[in-house]
Image (tube, rainbow over all chains, first blue to last red):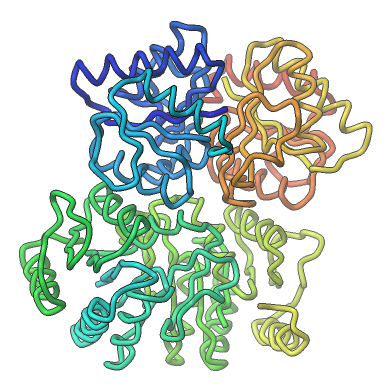
Length: 152
Length: 152
Length: 152
Length: 152
């Protein structure tokens, strides 16, 4: 199972902590963390996942991977700039958005296009997002989706 | 000048007429119409542009171009599915959104990512969109942007 | 019908002339010229096509389109760098390679991947290329392919 | 360090064994194996790497990842078809080609475009490829490239 965590490359302390906890829980479930590989929410999720022995993948905008945060295990530099956002979504079985700016909005929209379950915490108000209030609730929803065949 | 018109592959009669008029005005300015090449708002804009002797480009999701509406002059099949949305935005000097669903939302978001001016008519309420109420007003805003160097 | 002309951004005078003549013939057939939009073989083909009133499309590596040669009508900046090569091939019904370096080689290879007819003049020796010696012969082969349903 | 192993989705028994050994050696060096994730040479390399406790990444043409061989740890479905080939190359610090068909040829060509070191075993004869005769020799060349700063 690949779970994408999306969100801004800058974020509040509160959202950093939520993303970190989400990374921890993803690792504890044995899922692979997919993200855009950069700072902010992405870094927090990677940091959390690594602290619990998980595997982290960063699908990066750059050609050389130097934009990766230190907690990315598998760097996938794409040289595509923001176009790499769609690859983050396509690689995922489910997507969790935490806060975020326009880049996150494009990933939310692509989640609908690509028919991936999209869960949101403190993020853009877009109809269709499964809104939850914590990392724990997000993971519970993903497990429910798996049980009912709602993801790949 | 390339102007992208984005919007749903299905749309109301009212929005079809706005898109058609926008296509006409784009052609009259001598601009090239860029779109996703399909039905609905895209077809309406192409139809309008062709009625005034303009040039229309459809950047298509399919491999074979058979999904193009009949008013596309230049078919660019990409085989990329929804990932072609980012190419529509990157090819444009300015973007106008009319109504639209999640595909349009991804293009709106990418317009911010790629720093393209994005004008909206009856579309998603996203902060930063330049909101106008008619095709005529959209073209006036684009001309103002050009005059002030606000587009490529 | 979209015909892609591929080849180096630098080329010999002889190959420039062949590409120019190919552009002329493509325009005379009423076909649209697709290319990578830059200098060398691409410029020569665009120049030829424009001299006969044809339409030229440049699918460009840059974000801003400033790398286009002066004979490109429709600029499609992609921001994808060399990854735009596959879009040149996918947009084409048939591909003609003239000389060229590694970029051209990637387009030749993609033509096989994407099952597009690929005709070569003074280019890489790759099995499966339909080898001809002149622009005229290339166009004759494309017309034969169309007649027998060998292209889209 | 990401090392891409490229080659056909079908291959001879001999080339399968070379790819398997290459996978083993890549894992023993602590490098990450990047590949297209499918059968043939890709499967052999993944099988070898897993037998030595390595990590394997498959950048897949499909939307759903069902085309992955059983030895891929990290599945990256792209929905891009053959266009995913360029991502395999961009994600790599060095590329090793074993045998292969036109898909492999496109990856070889992209390796030159993207200025990645490209080593070949029983593959296309293309000028500029560093030709070697065994998996062991390929790894020796990569280590030499690293020592001299010839890769990322």
